[in-house]
Length: 200
Image 1 (cartoon, rainbow, N blue to C red):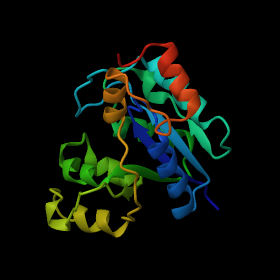
Image 2 (image 1 turned 135 degrees about the vertical axis):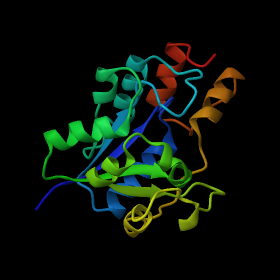
Image 3 (image 1 turned 90 degrees about the vertical axis):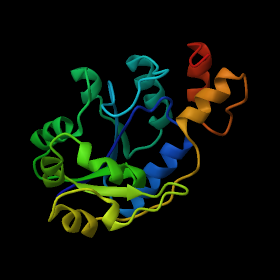
Image 4 (image 1 turned 45 degrees about the vertical axis):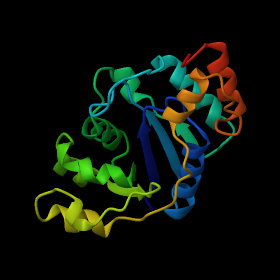
C-alpha cells in the first residue's frame, strides 16, 4: 500500500497555530502518513513584504513541529532558492517517492488563481489537491478558470476542511504594533520572533 503525504507549502512567515491545526486536520481527514511543511524561497504570486530570512523561517517550523511524529520539514525550495514553483517541487518529490500519493494543500481562494500557475496541467497530473475553506470565501466550479476537462477532474478530488481565522500577516502586524501574539503561535516560535527581532 502506497504512503500518503500531505504537501503543505507556504511562506510560513511565521508559522502559527492555524497552520498546525490545519495540518492535523488534513492528517486525519485524508488518512495521511505524514504532512510535509514546505517553506518557499520566494512565492511567485505574492509580494515578498517583510519576509523573514529563510534560515529563520526554517528554524521556526522545526521548533513548531518538533514534538509531532507525523509532521516533517521539507526544505527543497529553500535549498533550490529563487522563485518557488509548485510543479518543480512536486517533480522533485515524485522522483524521491514515485509510489506515494501526494495531496497538495491549498486554500479555497487559491483555486481562483490556478490558471496562473506554471504548468498547472502537469501539477494536476502529479498530485491531488486538498482544499481547505477560508472564512468568507465561496468558490463555485464556474469560478475556476481552467480549460476543460481540468475543472471536472480537479473538482472530483476536492475535500473542504475548516481553518482558524488566523493569518501570518495579522501576526506580523501585531508584532510591529507591540501587541501580544501568545496563543497565536507556539511558545517556541514566539521566542524565536523575539530573539531575532522579527517584524519590527
